[in-house]
Image 1 (cartoon, rainbow, N blue to C red):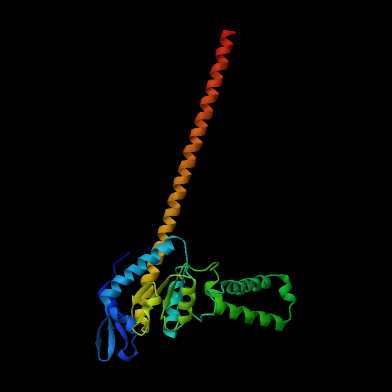
Image 2: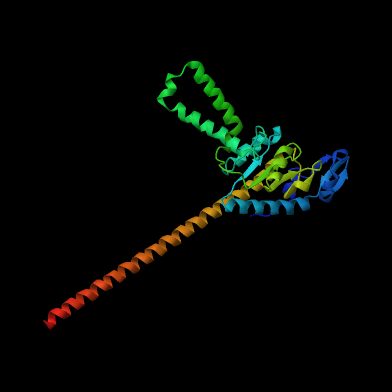
Amino acid sequence: MSKINFDTLLDAGVHFGHLKRKWNPNMAPYIHMEKGGIHIIDLHKTSVLLETAAAAAKQVAKSGKKILFVATKKQAKDIVADRVSKTGMPYATNRWPGGMLTNFATIRKAVKKMSAIDKLMKEPAYDNLSKRERLQLARERAKLESNFGSISDLTRLPSALFIVDVVKENIAVSEARKLNIPIFAMVDTNSNPKDIDFVIPSNDDATRSISLIVDVMCTAIEEGVAERKLEREKRASEQAEADRQKQAKAEATKLAKEEAAKAKTEAKSEEA
């Protein structure tokens, strides 16, 4: 995993915080200075903490577990959807349905309903439905897709969350805390970092800043997935080799027994 470059963070505007009057005192350790009434985030700390977060996310992905990305604010949703979809990780960008985590069984029912509608549309019975009924199904399917399409592969609770703007996504933070699910998050100067396991002090409003942080995290996840794949292939190869050697040994043993039996039979014939 490549080191996070300080100048890259600077160019993306990751250091720009909120107005001083909007700050959360708990963010004091991550603030470098105040300039023109705006708090400036300490990018040296951001760089270190981002690397730590990326390394942890990589291990989660390497273990085969899921990280749910949450970003429903306008300037972040498209960035997250486009980048995260390439990693195969789930994401919530339209809205956070209450109980997404704490009432996960109900959310799964909604996802299963979407699958049921898809199945129905492929069956002959669908053609016998009235135009109005088909239109209602199509609308319901579209609504379900909008709300849950990006988490359709999430068959169990995620192992971690990545959040852009913990103030806006406070419900997601609260649900994750109740279930002891670790949280990675971009935390701006107006936010409380105390409930976040992996704090990434950063500007959570600017698209360039969001894009950079999300890309670093997604790249780490992709590396973890790739390493997991290589390890599985290596184990499969080693198992195949072990099976081959075992089979070869068994065949050699069988052949030796046959040769011994043949020699014994020949010896008896000579004696006779």
